[in-house]
Image 1 (tube, helix red, strand yellow):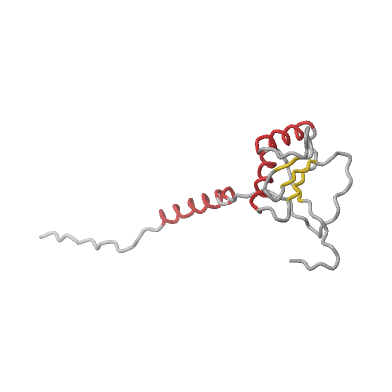
Image 2 (cartoon, rainbow, N blue to C red):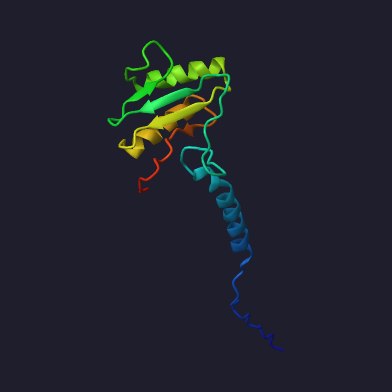
Amino acid sequence: MATTRQRRKPMAEINVVPYIDVMLVLLVIFMITAPLLTQGVKVELPQASAEPIPPEEKEPLIVSVDAQGQYYINVGDDPDSPIEDATLVARVAAVLRRQPTTPVYVRGDARVDYGSVVKAMTLLQGAGAPSVGLITEPPEAGKKQR
């Protein structure tokens, strides 16, 4: 009696279970890291049309940006002279340490580069301002809006 060996057929299936596990792990990683990758300045957008700033007991902290992109702040010895970025951050941080609920506003010239206003907002955020408002003038009657 001769023993006959049975030949095994090669398995033609792919085991996909490990691939599904890897895919689910990657999905979880991307879901966690995607919100962390967003960059930008946090600004509270208005929910309705613009209204006048309500009168408050505290004087607001106003950072002005002129047409050349120089910064001015309404606190300190000379509010009419331009200041450097580091001085701006130091003064705003000092005011917010003393009075954390002080409102902070940016007043930018209409001809100033948009990047200068965003840079000012970023500096204010770095100094500890929880929210930054923008000061505008109401449009004059009879003039066309752009």
